Amino acid sequence: MASPQASNHFFSNNHVQMYDFDYAADPVDVAWVDMQNYRRFVVGLFRSVGTATVDGFRILANTAADGSGTDIVVKVHALGTAPDAVGDQIYLECTAEEVMQEATDAGITGARYVTASVELNGATDEAVVLYILSEPRFAHDGLTADIIA
Image 1 (cartoon, rainbow, N blue to C red):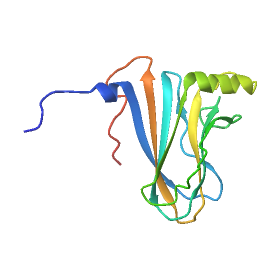
Image 2: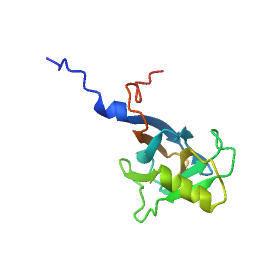
Image 3: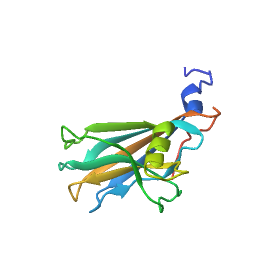
Image 4: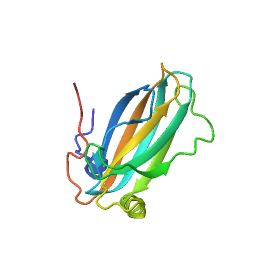
C-alpha cells in the first residue's frame, strides 16, 4: 500500500525543471529563469546521446528575462575530464550573492535572470539539463510541478 502521507518538503522548497538539449553549432542558453525569490541556482547536464565532448558549460546572468541584455559570466565548469560518454554528468552552482557580485563587477545592476549555457561538440549529441532553484524567499506548495505535454 502506498503511503497516505502528503510529504512535500523538497518540492515546496525547490523549483526543479529539466530541459532536453540537442546539439547546436554555437553555445546555447538553455532557458532563462528568474532568481529574484531564490538564493541558489544549481544546474546539471546529463549526456543522453553521442560520443563527442561538452566544449562549454557555464552559468550566465542577465538583466533581461529573455537574455537579450548583456550576458554576465557567473560560473564556468573547468571540464578537466571530458564528459564524452552517455551517462556522464556535470554540475554547477551559484548563489544570488554571486550573481549580484559578478554583475556589479561588470558595471551592471539588476541582473536576476540566469541560464545554463551549453556547447556540445558533436552534431548528433544530446543532453538533459537539470535546473534547481532553491532556498526560496517563501516556501509553498507547487514550486515544482509535473509537466506533461
